[in-house]
Each structure stands twice: as structure tokens, then as C-alpha cells.
Image (cartoon, rainbow, N blue to C red; front, side, top):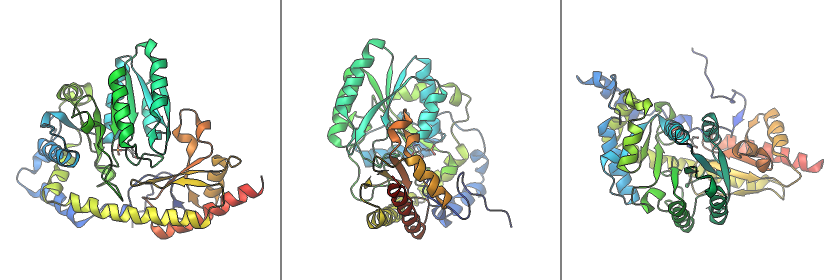
Length: 388
Ligand SMILES: Cc1ncc(COP(=O)(O)O)c(C=O)c1O
């Protein structure tokens, strides 16, 4: 029997509310096994194992363009989308080319830690703009743009508009319009990382930046990681034909292999058989129940002074601790009692800004573990408050 491997930071006897991974029990489905078998048994199966086209497997591009047009009210053409090695591959490529152009990047405070890591790897100058429960503070963005204007550097705004990682916040429609107007005025490229768009629990999210910009000016990133399986390492990038041409011709894809062609062939077959939409619908239900379990548990057991944002979708709940309680202490004590959570400090350019925050992921652990973990976490927080 092979030894079971756990994702980084997870052990057999701990509960992880730390990792933003899908529920592992949703990954190996009979529908997916059928798609893999079908891809490997046709006479053309060798095609799925060859280098692919630079832009990506065309049948999957066609499927995604059709779906985005339907879901977001757009009329994209196939030359407006390319496949990428996950959302991360798209961010890395955009960051590299932006650095080459001498650009700077604006991120939300807080923002997705792994993207901050990518931008830092490329040595890009980084600035952050504060957010509240409606997302980016447009007034603060205007102030920052005025401040950055004299530098003349090309600017890119990286945003996660729906069910944000880590805060769970969804940017309101009015803010989206204000921010797009500012981006046009100050010539800022908006990059919307929309990997959680399909995972809404209540209402569908507001129009995307790409839809508000009629499919041009903005770059939109999607991924199969959150709604099918991260191991495919497959995502996509949509934007204007010019932008997509430029990225398709960048060094990484120019070698002719395209992004993960084997994954793309499997996913095309899976989608062609009509399996993805019902899978997404089932995930919405599953993660909605987990969010509810987590919120009920927080309400039941957290001491006064602790607050949180109830997300309308996605994977995460963002918690704010009372001023005298440090996230680092709570994270360490919870870990000692077998509960893994994320320290808010990891999501800010200045870690101090997140010292009273925790990110709790409800996607990975089953509901009974979420319940148990929150009881332990509340006990830890109560203990820390009592010795202040
Ligand atoms: C906002 C955001 N973007 C991208 C990713 C990673 O996506 P991928 O697996 O497609 O690289 C994550 C995963 O946590 C995420 O939260």
C-alpha cells in the first residue's frame, strides 16, 4: 500500500483550514475517468501526447470562448483566448513581459500571496491599494495613480474581483465601473484573476471587467484548478486579439508546445460529454454548505471582538481579531493543537497590515472537521484574550 501523501503543511492528524485546495473527494470522478479512457483509446490518441499549438488546443479554446460569451454577455472570437499553465502561468508570463517593459504593479491589500511572490520574483516595483467590504477603494486608487503618474512607468492593476483570495470580498459593480474609468484615464492595464467566478453560492457575480470593457483593454484569467482539478495545470487568458497574439508569441509558448496539451485534450472530452457544468453546480452546493458550517461555528464560539466577512462564494473567510490579539500567536497556538490556518500577514506588502487577520479556507476540510477546528480556534483566541 503506498504511503498517503499530504499537501504541504497538512499531516494525518491535523485539520487544515490553511490550504486553498479543492475538496480532494471531488477530484477522481467516474466522468473524468471516462474522459481519460476515451482520449487514450481513440486512433488519434497520439495527438493528445504530442506538442500542441502555441495558443492551445483549439477545440478547448472554442469551448471556453463559447462559455465565456454565454456567461459574461461577450462576443469574443477564438483569437481572443489562449490556454496557459494555470492562472499562475498566465500571471508569470504577464509579469515577465511587464517587467521587460519597465512597468510597475498595483495590487489589492490584501492580495493572493502566491501572486505577490511571482511579482517579487520578477523584481517588479509593487504598490498596494486598500480594500473594504466592497473591494478596492477607488478614491485611494485615484490618489495612488496621481502619485505614480510622474514616474511614467506602465502600470498594471492585479485584482481578484470575485470571492477574493484571501478576503472573500466581491468588488461591487459601481466600484468596477469607477476603477475601469480610472484605468482608462491613467492608462492602467487591468488584469482580473477570476478563478473563483463560477463558485458563487447566492447570486452570480457582477459583470466582469472584461465584459465592462467589451472584451478589450482588460486581461481576464481563468483556471480549471478550482472547479475541476489543480493537477491539470491548465488555465486561460482572454483579452484583445493584439494582446493575446503578443502573449502567444512570447518565449514560453513560442516553442510550439502550448499549455498542457494532454490536460487540454482530456478536459475537452470531459466538457464535450457535458460533465463540467453539473460538476460546477454540485461544487457550488458543496462549498456553500461548508461556508455555512464555518460561519455558524464562528458565530457559536468566537469571543466578542472577533469579526469576519461572509463570502458570497469561493474558498475563504477572512477574520479580524481584536487589536490586542496577534495573528502570529493564534496561528502558532492553533497549529500546536492540530489546526492549520493562514496568518493575515502573508497577504500584504507590509506584513504588519495583516497582523490582526486570519484566512480560513473551507474548501479542503470536511464539515465535521471545520466544526471541530473552529471550536479549537475559538478556544485559542479566548485564551489569548484572557491573558492580555
Ligand atoms: C486568486 C488565485 N489565482 C490563482 C490561483 C492558482 O491558480 P492555478 O492553479 O490555476 O495556477 C489561486 C489558487 O489559490 C488563487 O486563489
